[in-house]
Image 1 (cartoon, helix red, strand yellow):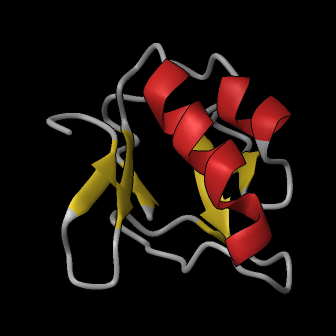
Image 2 (tube, rainbow, N blue to C red):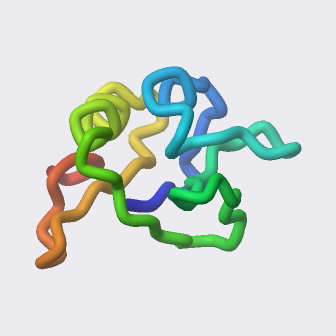
Length: 84
């Protein structure tokens, strides 16, 4: 799973739906976090979604006003997000 910050609106819906996976940085945009809570701010950073959070993350991707969250299956198939 990853976020395209160039499309992020900073709306915060993802942070509300799955705060252990998403967080806003100082720039007001959403980024992904590791399971240890480390914020990954490099462009295109990817994390594996813990199984109990998959539904919340898919919901966040589907509802994201910026259409910038990409949720991929292990085989690379797009599960949710732009183009799914």
